Image 1 (cartoon, rainbow, N blue to C red):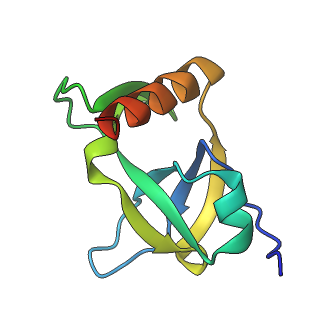
Image 2: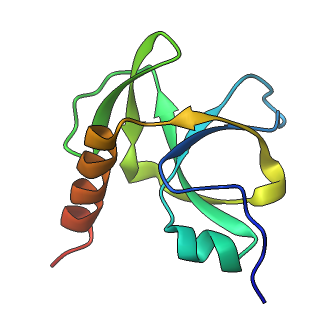
Length: 106
């Protein structure tokens, strides 16, 4: 059975406020096929703390410079997403995909 999921790979989303509150932005990195069949999403946080690590992808989103922290992939329930704020540019999406492949290739 397919779920009807509005969540697409490379979308920037805001998580529902948790215990720490605040506005936590994440990038969906799970493939759309997974997003359609599971109630969970694989996401990586966006951070304004610039490290320049090989697992970090530079991004400018909502007027702020930051990085996508691919070393911090975690799973969230689709119900924990407060809203979709946009998508990353295709060049950034390609860089994320290349880095993920490199991270998980022997």
